[in-house]
Length: 431
Ligand SMILES: Nc1ncnc2c1ncn2[C@@H]1O[C@H](COP(=O)(O)OP(=O)(O)OP(=O)(O)O)[C@@H](O)[C@H]1O
Ligand SMILES: [Mg+2]
Image 1 (cartoon, rainbow, N blue to C red):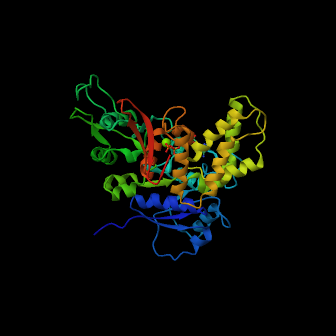
Image 2 (cartoon, rainbow, N blue to C red; image 1 turned 120 degrees about the vertical axis):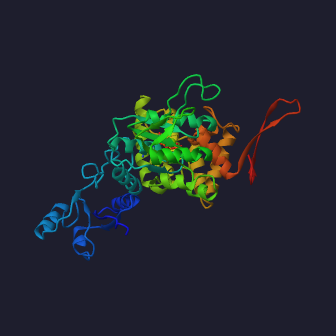
Image 3 (tube, protein in one colour; image 1 turned 90 degrees about the vertical axis):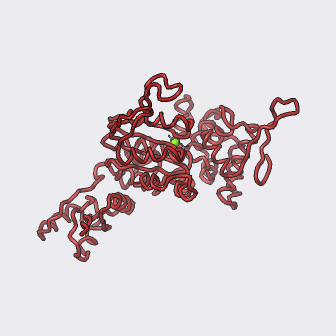
């Protein structure tokens, strides 16, 4: 006869906390029931006895402490886990800018608070977290926030961007190798999993891990063990994984570009970081924050942001998200001579043009913006004046976006056999 899974009751007035706790509890195979208030909890049909009650303290009406007294009076004994993030939760009435304890994370939109609530719920556990979001939305900054709240905050924190390492070298980067394991392996190398032992590993762009390496990653996530290349000795580690990607892993699974079993193992606790256009309320805060930051850094006293400038910035779609905003403000601060922020005419025109054309799909907006940047950069992608920097994107991210949107950059050869002429062929247009 199969054992019945433990039942956990969660009482919390914050829907995002209820949602986050539920998915965490379900992910370990337990059952969960949630209640938005103490009254709702008391009115429940008393079917199953719960194994544990997770109780928020500050509840509207009857508080968590009142509820405990009620239960004690009625001689109902349930183990209680009080306010899981009681001392850590972002204040419900958040103040300006530093709206929460995640100091360098600016914003107080409901969408961002929802993300931070999930961070607080999952951070103290050792569960794998999968951060999903477009480029520049803040996946890395959120990974660090998880680390800071976790019990591993003082332990090693090791990062690896899977897209930045040539695929042939990724295996030895992750798992290490013995001397002589392959041609060129002149010294023994300790891999990132071993370096992160006892701490946290942040695997960025996890969607770029080649298929043939995925079973080995799955094994280390499940068993916490692996062998260095060229060795038969099994190494055991204790590593908490935070993974991030801007790719649609479910779609990649459907297209057989990503293993389904690894996807399920990574997807234990996914946190979707919304793009900036879905939390436009944060734009003024971010603009002020970055104007102050760069203004101070460059010793400029910029303290006025004209209303129409702010309005235009708020209307813009920000395909490169916060990184694009950050870069645009840095440029503006450099170019501003006095104390009134001046945004480059071309930047703003581009912003409003992009906005007025948002009648098209988001893809159209992205395509237009990328083509424009490529034109401005003379079809150069990388480097300090390249299109990637103009868009606030990493070179690799821009390349993968271009590939997705069907924008192709070609290097043609002249008849002299030397190269030159860059021409950009676009699926439906020309640069
Ligand atoms: N809420 C925020 N407040 C202030 N700065 C932010 C916020 N979110 C992101 N940033 C800043 O925006 C930039 C981009 O963030 P980050 O590198 O975390 O994004 P990402 O999602 O990892 O991007 P990519 O997919 O391109 O790697 C960083 O400089 C980061 O400090
Ligand atoms: Mg990143």
